[in-house]
Image (cartoon, rainbow, N blue to C red):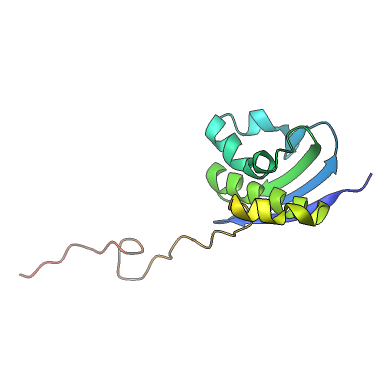
Amino acid sequence: MKAFQGTGRRKTSVARVRITPGSGKIVVNAIPFNEYFPVVTMQQAAIRAITATKAEGKFDINILVHGGGKNGQAGAINLGIARAMVVFDGELRPTLRQADCLTRDPRMVERKKYGQKKARKRFQFSKR
């Protein structure tokens, strides 16, 4: 049985996704998917690529994800699954593109600047 791989990134999270044709079991960092993402909205965000292609229950998915928070990890997982599905079947690309699953979100945290409190917030200005 051949496995198909895809890498997804979002903010500072990186997800390595491996899909194999199977029964629909999803494992994230050796933890069942529903335990790793207890919030339903996060689950939906993470498997949006599967829902868009109507492939629920067709793939066993093994995911290794690190960095960032749960929200960034869910976005990284979505992109990784989408890329792996394109490797599996190239005809899924237009469907995934239309569902906005193949676009890497470029937004990153802006760095803190010296002489300021945060990236954009400044210390209070005193005229006198």
